[in-house]
Image (cartoon, rainbow, N blue to C red; front, side, top):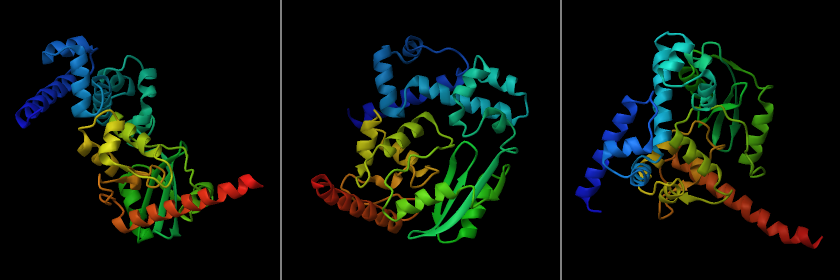
Length: 292
C-alpha cells in the first residue's frame, strides 16, 4: 500500500469513526457500517482494527461511555445519562464500569464520595506513591519528592477524599518493596483504573510480558491485532496510571533501545537491569534445587 492509498484508508476510517460516534446510542451492525464505508463486513472489521486498534464494536462502547460521562457531568439523573448514552439498562452500564475507574454513580458525582487512601515510601528509584480505592490500586507514581507526588494525586482526584493511610496499604507497599528489591516478580494486584478498550488491551499485553524480558512497541501492536498502530500503542503505554504493576518499562524500541518512560530513562534502565539480574539468579538456582 502506497502513501496515497494509506491516506485514503485513514480518511475513510476517520469518517467511519465519526459516523459511529454520532450514532453510538443506536444498534450498529458490521453490515450497516460496511454499507456506509462501501466495504464488506470482513474488510471493514480488518481495516478498522488495523488503523484504530480496536473493533468497531469496542469503539462504539467507548463512545457510549464518553456520552454517559458528558450527560452525567451535565447534572442529569443516572437513569437519564444511562439511556441517553445508549445503554439499554443500568446493568449494561455497570458491566462497563471498569472503564470508568469507579461506579457510574461515583462518576456522576465526580468522585465526590470516593475515598482514596495513599502512602509514600522510599525506594531505590526514589519516592513511590501508592493510592487505592476500596476496589483496588488506582495510582502508582515515582518521583524525587513525596510532596510533589501527593500534590499530583490530589489534583488528579480533586473531588475525592484523599487521605494518607500507611497501615491500610501496608500489604501493597510490602509487595512493591519486595519487587523493587528483586524478590517479588509477581505483582498481580487488584486495580481500579479507567481505560479505553484499546488501552485495556495494551495494558493486558504488558502484564503478560515475562519478568526480566522486554517487547518492542511493534511487537505489542502486533499482539494487539493492530500491527500498524504503533503510535497508538505508545500513547496507551504513556497513559498507564499504575507504574510497575502494569510494567510499561518492558516496552522498548525495535532495536532494543530505551525510550518513552514517563518516570525517566534512568529509572527504566534500573528496573530492567534489576529484573534481568533477579531472573538470571533464579534460573541459576533452579538446577541446584532440583538436585535436592
